[in-house]
Image 1: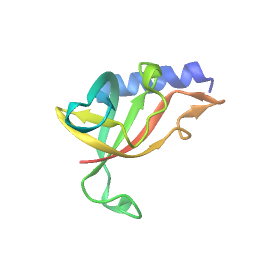
Image 2 (image 1 turned 120 degrees about the vertical axis):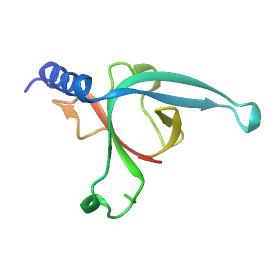
Image 3 (image 1 turned 90 degrees about the vertical axis):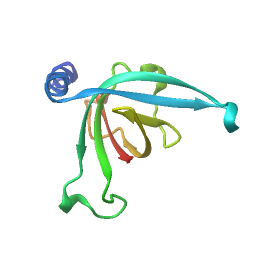
Image 4 (image 1 turned 30 degrees about the vertical axis):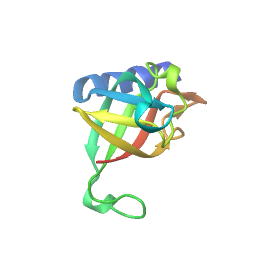
Length: 114
């Protein structure tokens, strides 16, 4: 499958089953720090019981996000946050390998806490 085909397939799946989430990037320190929000479409799901191993714990969620609207904030890090349905969640890890087709990044697998 070519990267453009994989992106179109992932986009269809997320548009049917996903929702808008926000990547929040903070600047500065202390109470006066500011942030910039960037919206993207994503599929948010709880981890299954059999997935709760290692760093994945009960309450964590798996977010599969399209990257085409995130170019301005890539790469994501654990200093960024994901806002899901109005709740700010901490990013525990970002996998930018799983959804890479022929070297082209089409989506991110993100583990969030909360």
